Image (cartoon, rainbow, N blue to C red):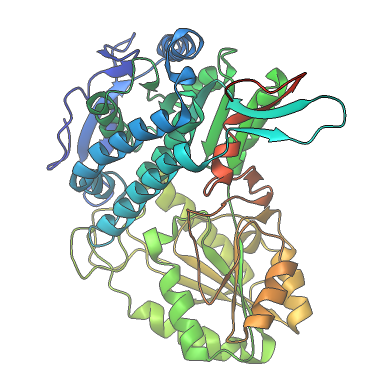
Length: 489
């Protein structure tokens, strides 16, 4: 069973060692639409034994197969073919996203087209990246520094942007020469099935890409498998902490892109109405379910009430509705547990801050996981709604005494993924951006560019994805000292 417009050949099977195979225990995962609360897809569920089979297949393909030995440029050309196969199926990828998490159909082509373009950029690194270089040496005639694949990599993607995040991880791993096990979220497995089918069509060798979808226990078993050399994980800080502990215990490599509670600092020179438009509309992107979301707004104290009123007006004008409607600006939250999470934080906020607008399910939408855009004002930066990731359309407005205090409040967080300043002064934007402890920072909005490094400070993660830097985490550096220059590098 798959959603209308999504054609999968083997949703009831796993993809291991180049074949579609039955799950060991015959389990199934049901996918529920956040728009209708109906089951829209059913796929195979992997258990621990299936995870071990996938690791064994990837291990054999890495240790004995041709993939790691291919010239990087050739790997890049094959990944480019994979991207071209994915490009053909972008309409299905868009439909899958909307069906599984309620992503807006109006935004889906932009999001998924951009993700495929990123895969093509990564494929091009097979030609342009310097995998082997001669370096100066004081000890020998020839010193060579080589970048070699880390080995078997597990790519674990979250449910909010499954295609873009998982395809990027897989593409970097493949260009580096790794073999890969895709482990999508059990809420959003359909994109990974399309990626596996595209790998078949592109001629990627057996065992180089594998697909298993399972629950938390089976996934934990996967990252504990000693045959896994590297885990690339995007998701919650709680889950990332567990993966980090497991990898540290085995001295395995890991990249963790985790949660955020990012702050936007509003400077005095920025007009109130313009700030309200940016902040009030940004928090509705993907229903606020974005790790880099600007969910805290820090404003000069004397402008606080005026900005609160202006943001409220913006939020009250947001069109809430089904994901398929072309005029919908805010669709549902992705799942029932996410709706309940947002509701629980709103109840906390009612006790600790001023609820300006929102805070409840919209009238007239009796089915689906819909929630109004919500603004809390006069928020204490030490409160839970200001410090913990809500992952919903909830914005906290925090007053600051001056610029120095605003930067202090922005940094007063266990997270450090993203940040912004609303100002027309480029020098001020750069100055503040260097002071805010976050992996990314933008002027006048939530600026994200995945062709550049992306990742976090503090509990927002370890390592970087995106740009050339995204390739480094799937490589090991080897130094070779020789008495002469080899005939071929």
